[in-house]
Image (cartoon, rainbow, N blue to C red; front, side):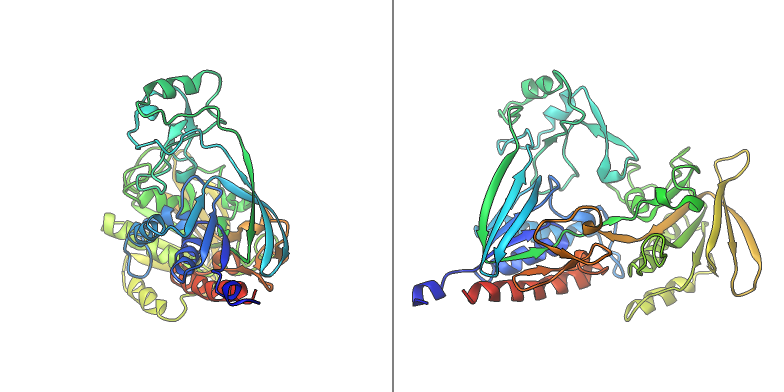
Amino acid sequence: MSEQTSKQASRVLVIGGGFSGLTTAVDAAETGAEVIVIEKNPYLGGRVSQLNKYFPKLCPPICGLEINFRRVKTNPLITLYPMSEVESISGGPGDYNVTVKVNPRYVNENCVACNACAEACPAERPNAYNFGMDTTKAAYLPFNQAFPQRYVIDSAHCKGDCGKACREACKYNAIDLGMKPETKSFKVDSVVVATGWNPYDANKLDILGFGKVKNVITNMMMERLASPTGPTGGKIVRPSDGKPVNSIAFVQCAGSRDENHLAFCSYICCMASLKQTTYIREQNPESKVRIFYIDLRTPGKYEKFYAKIKEDANVAFTKGKVANIVQAEGSDDVLVEAEDMLTGDKVKVKFDMVVLATGMEPAGASQRISGVDYSTDGFALSNPGVFSTGCSKNPMDVAKSGQDATGAVMKAIQTGQRR
């Protein structure tokens, strides 16, 4: 190998632009590696961008994301491909061929995010970012601080001449309805899989009432309800009637640690419910919270957070698996039936709203990439040259995801250096 070849920078492809993918991209690029980021959404930030606050410091996640957005934007070694998906990976360490499908955004880089297209757009779509709890126009900005700060047109809901109104309203010639899907090929030295996770489908949890009982929501829906940028401007109210929530139940392990659903512990669910307890208690000091759990898992430093919540007299803990959730007769209230394992009593309690702590299902459980190895649960497996990180590898919190991504970077750039 010549001296010139040995000094060539590594070329790393990162699949996923969530917190782990962003950390991987900026860390790798700041070592001098060339980085290509493939993200299926029209924005970066992944699930973390949907959170109201991190635990245990309870600060807004957009602060940390903005720092990484700025690092990505100003680093010429990072190339982004939003709305893209990896179709296949072939080859071996130091010499991978990756095929990527780039889906049309219908809005080009002339966009200044002025909102004129959305104001003119005649069609609406369910807002997936808020888990369908509100709608946006078919021409939309995914969220206020989205990066790239560029609108997108949802072709599934923009039919016929719908896009014409957007195009005519745009003063910057940013609407390009003629965009087509493209296929791109890349040669890279290593691949980092950071495809993240999806909330487990609560519709599969028959006895827990989601989709059938009013005011049963998931933990990620609760994050959006509590967020100032969410569907209610941060007011925690019942979806059915807008009533402020005075009594709320959290049901732990909704789909996790269950051989019929997710066999593993999703790691963050207990802490997420304790965090969300602070949301409702701070917003409504008279509110009462009850947490139904099998085991409360608050590892390491998070035990202090649990101890603090436990001191609140308006927060009760019931050790026992929920047996049934039904609609209260004649009202929008929710009835929760469970067994208190510590007393042996059957309990039946009425609440304004119930939050299901649904588990973290790896993205690989529903969509696998040719050329990546997976466990039976859908977690991406590392092998020489292809490295998994973050929640595509194991359930983990944001802090651990960042640490794990840095470890993946070290392995990825070393693969390129061995050429």
